[in-house]
Image (cartoon, rainbow, N blue to C red):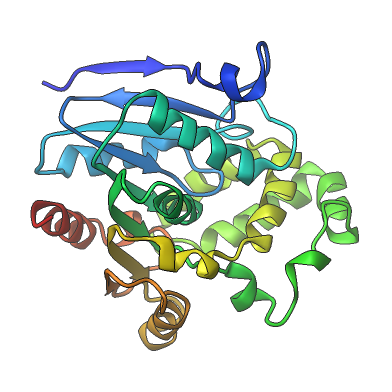
Length: 279
């Protein structure tokens, strides 16, 4: 039986200074080859519990959660960069080697960033519906420099009344999974988030462009893409944005929105196990 423990990420004392809030927390399960599980925006690390239960290789799972979400205390901006830096320290301070990272959405972006920074440590990546430059798809031609924390849109979101914010969260959640029973879960993750982390953290993600670091990634990579809005459009976007990533395989989930692990779980488990067992 797998052992279980929850460990507060004490290394944050080193990177942030004594007494300040860490940017990440970890839950460690089992023994074996280290796998970091990096969830998406607003999502808890526990979303990967079923993935762990279905893995066929013996592993030491590190489930990561982020500041400002799931009851974790918020941290000052910049948010994404601080999380990335603490993950680097986490990997080094725990002497993790031959690391696999499985990341969904923003977690896939972090996985890519870490693999570029630690090419001799990160050997395998599973990227689940994450695109290197979300801004290019959502706001074509808009430079990152124009996106600021203090903006009319962000200020409106920060001040938005709870009921209207819940309506916005509901529309977003409905576009992220085909499973109606999971929509409420996604809504709750959004509305329970620290509001400033939610708003300003999303600005961090829109500014991100990882296409510039893909040539530094040597890890063997499996990219699992959702078929939304269509398989053809989605696959074309993946092929274009990951063009400079050399050692990759792209596979598309049919009839799936953003949360592939909800919409196509058996297909997802099969792809991950096949990839990891053939490393």
